[in-house]
Image (cartoon, rainbow, N blue to C red):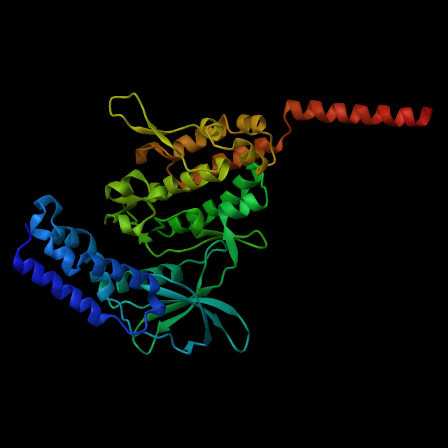
Length: 398
């Protein structure tokens, strides 16, 4: 049951929310919407009905469980922050995006007209500040053509850290591939560029921890860029493990490995699993669906590429986006490609590829084999050439 003291505390929280909000909320519509939800939860009418509720439905406990963690993060935000006119030598342009703790601006160098993306923290939470500075430090240590690089960094007049990085104009990996109607072979070739970037990061003891299509952009020239090392972490060079555990809010569950979801220590195998999910979706247009095996431990096992493709609501559309008829695509999805995905998506870390390079090696071999024409292709090609010769002979006779 909710006590009078708890009700008074919740009313006090509501008053703090109202007093702490800025007069102009247009710059933080998302945060304002969350606060509106907390306000509704703390309305006097809701509190007045509290004594009639059982302990399991106690609104105070519900607020502590759902509302207050969000509120604590919002309280740490500096509602009066303002972007400076310049970030170093780059003039501040329009805002490209805003999140709960950081904003991204377009920056332009007046002399060279070079454009950059400037990411600035606008939270005073020391944990978020540490995470932001770690991301800046990690990106500064990496230099690879398929990664973004830090060009300049510093602190604003208000003390908020920022860093300028390459401005990437591109589309997510899956959208680009579908828009260009890439074949399976070309999709794998594009994916191999992602593998090169992740292999380089792992070689520098960095695991990404949030690999997904939205963090993989393809530029107009077809160059792949792996973005957002915001929750990346440093591996122990000796053990190859990352000692801290992940929180659900710092990952994308649909692409997270079983050990991430369970909050266990992470390793390079975590990124290998996420790469497997990305490749699976790239090939069949959907993330893997899982079924429990009949083994004693009831481990999860993804459906086969072929089975999931055929179970799609519109397999013909998926096939045409890959320049194949449905039966052709179903055949291409079977065999070696299936075995590669099964190994990458193994539930146990020790059953996956030992390195991203090993996975890439098998994919390169698959691409090399797919470059060779099949017997069917040779037969069709031979028939076309024979028909062409007959047509020419008939033309001469006529």
